[in-house]
Length: 227
Image 1 (cartoon, rainbow, N blue to C red):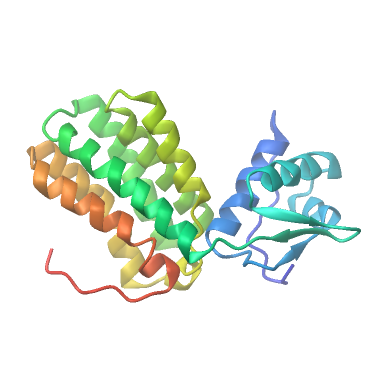
Image 2: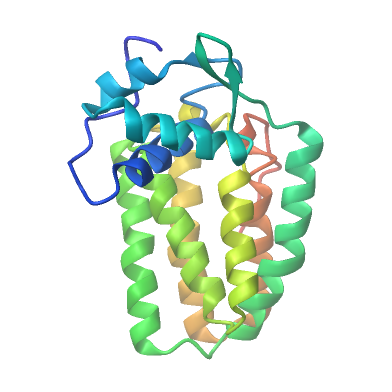
């Protein structure tokens, strides 16, 4: 663990394991805990100000999810996601999410739009603050809520899991950059297109937004657009 930890002590809530798991997963996804980083249960317990038990349970769950692997007598090592893995995740999301938002154009009710707008604003606020764990949490929630409006629970669950499996190794380098702000703002722009009934525009924007996984969010350049 580095001196500048991405973690803050968690509050004592009903499920400390879930809180620890989500926080560590968020740090891994954002690249704040890079592949190869070795973390120990006692060190994490101290960072979170909790006992070792919920941390150990959280790390075992993350092991089952493929985020870490055990290292005998040392703790857990953060695993890497290959370029092929990311390509497959992006391909699946592009097959699913753009058609869903296309069909939602002009059909999002006022109450649903307001709920999504709150999440979109939370994403933008987190980007402005450089709070990557909060950015990722709001982003996952936004995409889950949006896709769920299509009425297919399994699709919503699949998109959420694909989003959680994604590693955004270049995301932490985007803090305080125009690219992060632009990516965050795309959520609000998407809502505007949906409310305007612009099916083609919403579909195109969602496809481009997902493409950031292989571009900006992986530390790679992207072609400039005029959109």
